[in-house]
Length: 313
Ligand code: ADP
Ligand code: MG
Image: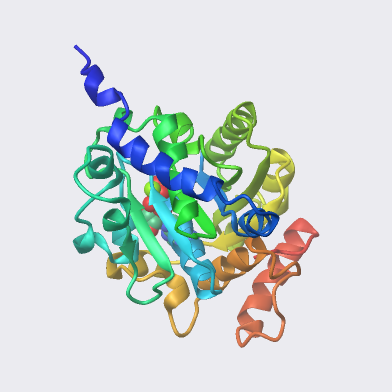
């Protein structure tokens, strides 16, 4: 039998969050309202239809890049069943409390926020250490992001369960924007399309696409759909394309996002560019003056040849 007391939101938590929200609402003068509007965070859910396509890798790298650009960022690990954002960021040993503990009144929200030591404006928040995914309701998620907004986070990135997962709807509920991650494989693209529909059905229309694990050699042989083809099939604006890169595995094992490497690999550059584009700092194609111009230009040329379009990354 279901334990309904576990499903019900903890009134203490909601009260704590609600009072924090009320504090900001009481700001009555126009200046404050304007400041609030300017500082209200962008809440972006990183999602996919198919699992294992690179959501967590993208959340860690894009989140870290945005933090390096100077914004205060919090990454929420809402993929409770397959939680591993902490590992990718190398923060797994520092998680003492999760949102579940906040909900149960065991700790304050700021105690569950883990600050990255490398970039102090980046924080990680895990929803739960175990598979109690049904315990976090839509209302909980919405109150949570309101409380995070009051802590002045500018970007809230939610690493979401795959789109058909039960936790998906709750995880996306506070988001205004979505980043759909897909590979160029047909099943992943089909599922990405379903997720785009689900997002729209839930009122999220600002959707962007990140195509991961792109292999120019396969595209060249017509064994993989090109970046442009995938984007056209899905009809979602492209934020970036990330090449297949063995360094992703190395960085995962080290707990150090690719974008922190002194000498960026192609996927590191691609993630960084996607992050810059997301914050509106880069609305152009790859920087041809980059030190990687030689190698990178070759790849762009390959995509150009196969897609007749510029490879955005
Ligand atoms: P998800 O969060 O969607 O389940 P992950 O980010 O955990 O996916 O990635 C799934 C696997 O794919 C991981 O083993 C990761 O190292 C690998 N991976 C992700 N992106 C790339 C890439 N661009 N190149 C090579 N391997 C990748
Ligand atoms: Mg994941």
